[in-house]
Length: 237
Image (cartoon, rainbow, N blue to C red; front, side, top):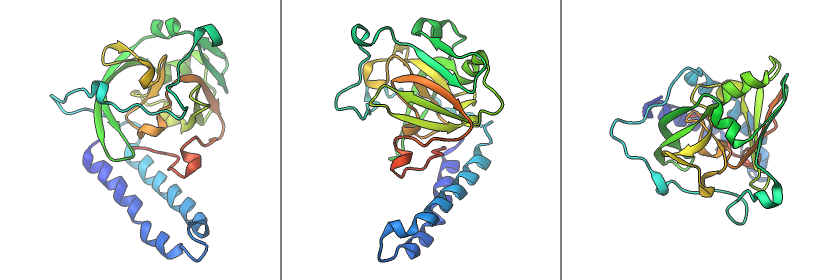
């Protein structure tokens, strides 16, 4: 996964931009919705072909961790905080097309084989940061829950005003896709998604759901907060 590869993806997207300009008529962009959907499908084909779900992200040697400089994003009016006195003990529900639905506490997650990865964070706005995430692989959670073969998509749901984003199963099962509960050697703070969040360098930042409460395995995709607003659904890097 290299900068050149990212540039190629951007160029592949711009290849259809000229067609979009021609498609905008007196009704404005709404008149080009079919072409926009077509362009997104074609971009996804290119991104899937480049990623192949075997590429591994690596940060540059000697790069500094962003630390507290990593921006905090949420859609609630204030920073989402899980209040145990009001909501009870936090847990992560794993459901949908699984043989063994699970409800895991933070302590349960910490008992599952953990990984720590120093990887890049790619924002749709164009900036990149390096961070170190600790957590358990989503693929391991899928194994524990007995994810079924008919599960082709995964929805990551949040208590941040019901924020969610659905992924393709291949990206969710990538070895660098984790449910993270620690950042830069410290437990996650409320600004960055505590108690746990999804993180993977194979997806743009907005696809990585913070304040996680549920992972649902599904036969079809069900959109997401930003993808329903017009952002690319696949959101690969």
